[in-house]
Image (cartoon, rainbow, N blue to C red):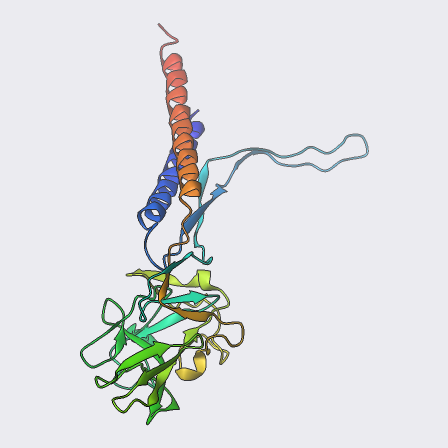
Length: 294
């Protein structure tokens, strides 16, 4: 009976964590670029009352007798499925259709030798970008959108910020990430090309808040074959090598399904209630044992 009480406690803790994950998903149902979480459970180590015995010449085999000791959290996964697209008709709102993530940087004193250990690089699917006072394309936290820079209207092969001159009359962003603008003389110039990061295991990325992810050792290799961010060679061109296409004037919304989350919430609530019932039932039986001598 004491085993059943501790098993009930472990179940309650697990379903509390499940409710936390479901609650976070529901809270971010309208967060652009958000990727929902999912929790899985595992059984704990079982107490073996008697081990298995093989068959003999005169008797058949015997299976082991074990009593489980409850459940535990197995994993909390980030599900990187495609979110719905919402049209905004704003040029700097960018949605990704397919695999890949925008690359954000900060403290870019030397853009061609960025130190990943200093947490200078982040990845995101949230494409609401803006222009700062210098014409750099940034996100809502001021992190620079990175890509291949341009010199005198031609791509220069270096990783840099995407910058649009103050004298530009207008600008546009194509599906392959090319950013062009019309100068004061009416000529079309190249401001750079947005690059994307592609991972073999995007579920291995770590959430850091503000819709951003950070690289871990389990996220998968970059294009140059290692797990370190070394610059432009680690990034892919949109619409090439199976990478995503960039849609200007739209945002990718959360991939949270409210109907599914409410169902999971009801399941977690009932599971929690069932485990509390295990504890109260075990307590009632223990109370009967204590009162036997009366």
